[in-house]
Length: 387
Image 1 (cartoon, rainbow, N blue to C red):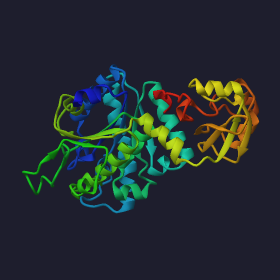
Image 2: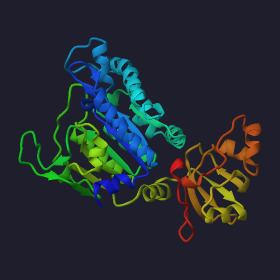
Image 3: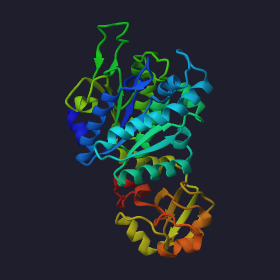
């Protein structure tokens, strides 16, 4: 499968943009023409129905100049201050260029912890899925003013991979000043062989190919990109490292410019289903009636009206076992309510939830996208707006 097909067939794409591409290092100003060309590429993707999420570096590079910070390595608190000043200007620049294509930008600040804490993960995922369903283009950056470890270790690459996994993206595009992975550092070995494709696994031999280059403002390098590739492939998401230094970097990539693809064996849906069914220990159980059991087997979500009993003390986002009235497990899933709230709404219609709980949550107690029916039954097929 060629580059054009891989990108053109992707329903959901995450684009990670390195600081050196976006910001003039000497002046601390955004490369406006380059960003306009990127916006045009994104508009093409949106016009053919693809969801696009941007994970952008560059806030520190922009902010340090506006705050008058000296060149060279910054101390941690200086990076945090620069990020706070720079993100305002960076977001405004993205907003301006996307507005020219009638695209709505939505800023989301995340940390790696938001992708590891179950409840915060679900909140972030639901927010991103809602924004995409409403046609917006989320712009994501690390919340650098509080994410101290992320600033130090250059985790925008890894954050992009976590975001791609969170929303079950089909492709993560990492744009940088490199056109992919080489067997040796091409700055030291100009004749080093380019690696066009890695399938299934990043081995120690592949890791050894990564250099240690970092910039004064950026904090990543090929090492963090390989870490992002490992996260992406484990989630069933393909990743590509491509040269973003020219105008229209996405259309150039789609036209066949040189790059390195990291191709997973599983799909995002398969990887997520495997994670839910095999990697998470259930924190409790939902006992369902016959009607709900039939609905699950036909690929539908589990509604509170079909739950007869709650067992355990789980929290929102925990894995639960779904059992029939004879205590046989029929499915596993991620629950949308805590056990305390679930006990209040089981057996009730969705129209009654707000009066009972004091807030309106999801209609489903376990959404079909967060559900794996046991072997021998029909598994639900997730939709892109609730992965």
